[in-house]
Every structure is written in C-alpha cells, then in structure tokens.
Image (tube, rainbow, N blue to C red; front, top):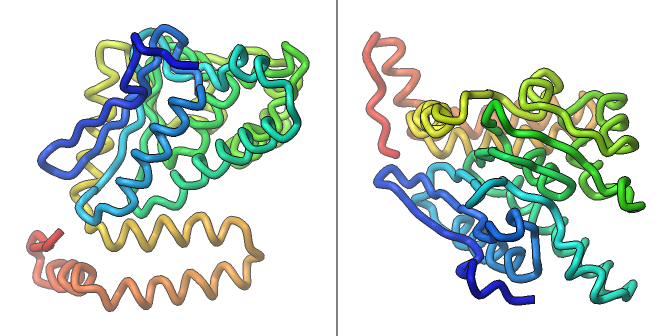
Length: 263
C-alpha cells in the first residue's frame, strides 16, 4: 500500500545540539505502521545508530494521533503465515533497535497510541504524553491478542495491570498511563512540546558516553539475575570512571565548579 499524500513516511529534523526528531507521517491513517512507514522508521533509526553526534531522539506523530498500531487493512490483504511471521519479526527488530540505540529515546505522545503504537511508547526509554492522550492494546477487540506489545508492556507496567489492558482492550488515560508507569510526564496539549524539551535539555546536559554505557547496562541487567547484574554494573561503572567525562566531572565536583565536558 502506498500513501502518496502522506509521503515521506518519516519526517526528520535535527537541532544544533544533536537532538533528532522522527515524526511518523501517515496522518490520514493515524500513523498506522504500514510496511512503508515501518521501512522508513527502520532506515531513520539505523542512521541515528551510526551517527556519533546524536544526543537524543524524539519520536512523534503527525496529525491527530501518535500511532494506531499495525495497518490492519494491509495485513488483511496478505493472509499468509509467512507474511505475518516476517512482518511481526521485522516490527519486533525495529522496536529492539530503539532499545539498542546508545542515546535516550523519548516518545512524544498525543491522541491515541494503540496496539503496536502502545508498544512503541513502551519500548522508548522515556515518554511524555498530552493530558488528552489515550492508550490501549486493543487487538483483542478484533480477535488478535497483542502478543508482541505484551512483551514491552509487561516490562513497563505491573503484571496484572498489563494483563488487564491486554485482555480487555480498554483505553487508559494519560494520567492512568503515568500512574501505571507507561509514561514519565503528562502535560496539557499546549505545553506538550515544552515538557518534552525540559526532558531533552536535562539529557543533553550530560555526557553522551555515560548515558550510552548506562542505557546499555540498564536493559542488560533487567534480563539477568541479581549477582550477574551487579557484576555487570560494577564493570560498567569501572569503565565509565575511566572515561574522560567522568574524570572531569569528579574533579569538578572536588573543586566545586561546573564540569567542562567535551561532548
């Protein structure tokens, strides 16, 4: 399926600090993840991963919504097990690439974030939502349990809270999403960009190396036992301490002055 009126599928912008904004651009379809949009997002994330000057990424949606999940019309047009396996594997790899990026990724959420769109929010490191945003893993409403979204959702919410969303398909509000741990901050619609910028500014003020080491360790240790996690964390901190930014930061603390980081 080709959405010529919405092309390009992902809009990219970058500011002087190295903050990249990737905007899903299928507004006529509430930014549903068609193969075209999925491919564009894959390529954009690969470019970010290869660029050592990027400091943070913001993922946003054009139009009235953040992301409505997979394109069900496109999926229904190709009723093949092989096609579905490849599609979901591909989408899962794209989601995982966000977690593997060496910089923090923030979801800027407005409107709805449903099914794989909710998964996208959950896989981002941080999320800021409009107070009018709504979230759901609603595949069950059409007979399709949101299995792949359940993986990241269950790593953000409590088990019973995640399972309730998965088996009911019901929407939760932005405030409920914050209380449950799906988003970090909620702001009125007119203040959403300012809330995102506040978080971005705090991130880019820190050394990139420390954030890259920390992010990688954060996700690794979640999947291991406590002894292995502590051993990994100790090694990561030792390596981090040998970095020029950390040495300068500690020296600045000792001398009671602001650090002079070469970012």
